[in-house]
Length: 154
Image (cartoon, rainbow, N blue to C red; front, side):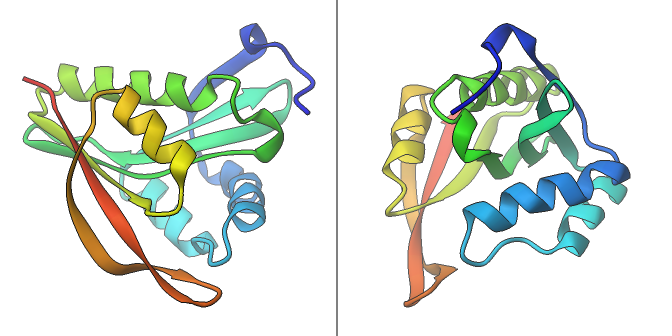
């Protein structure tokens, strides 16, 4: 269970020294996590990478690419003991506002077809289902489809 109230959760840009903390959350959440090098590449190549902290603890992160035409949320992960406290919603608000300021026309993202919490969150934020990516995610028993979501910003 989370040990800090929401008013002491801070968001800042990810830097190279945060990658191991992020990877710990990633590898404890997913059967086939992103590698350290993927996170490092996202930071080094200028993706829009942010993390949430509570005290000295990293509790979640969002990796996105915000561009004037179309933005893409690539990874949104919250540490299990901080879920359902509004951290993911705050990240979505933050990225949506950043995308609007950058004059993005829309935001894309994918979610596992079995991830009901994520799907409900994205629908709550006005994302619409626009398609399916067959066998997109690697899972223990093979592959799982991804639902493609899109939010129009204009």
